[in-house]
Length: 297
Image (tube, rainbow, N blue to C red):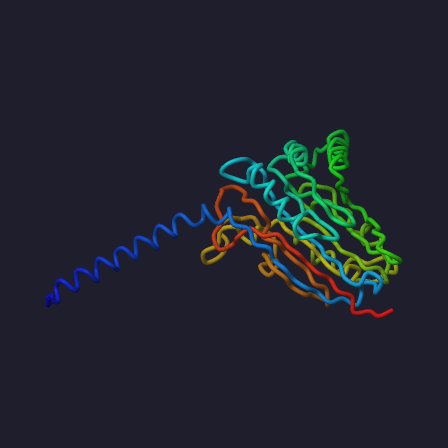
């Protein structure tokens, strides 16, 4: 049956209206749904610094959990994330800080954390939400006890040696630059030029200073891989970050992989949300990093 132009136009306008309303609902609702997604970012890096005896190293890195309960990260989702981490069969699991919203809740986070498995251990640094400038030794001691009970090693202005076969690699962890007492000079001086070093600090704000620090041989370029978090990638972005999680940090340190002075570095978007239980175009992520040695015996 023939339909007049006005009928066809009315139907077209109706279809466009429905499409517009659908897109509008998606735009309004997706920021509340995106925090419940989780991306596993997988990257492979070739390194002439990794000892040939190690060959290949599988690292899982996870940061910025911000456990708070619904509508933020819940215990149930945390259990699911731990299962995802364990399924990646890592040689090392590295945790990048900001486990809860207050220092007193960080201990509760680790108390509720399921067992994480890794061939050569699980290591953690602290973020600004895990530390306060007034932290006393007793609270830090309680945190260390809780971490040890979970088989997790705390890196706090310290360097840990990990023996793998006949070779060693080194983890260098710095205290938080905003709420802690970082000692970059001490950490950098704890390694040698020939060591393979993974450097962890919660905030990428430290990167420019870390690149000018020197090892015990007096040389810059003392770490081979840098891992950072804190920014959430902006968490909410439209034409730029809507939250001020990265104030004082250069824009190219907001998120993702970069290489400076031939050193690969990662700024993770993290897992949880802060301030508001929303993300927009910055989905949560954990990382599986495979480092392969280019050396030969």
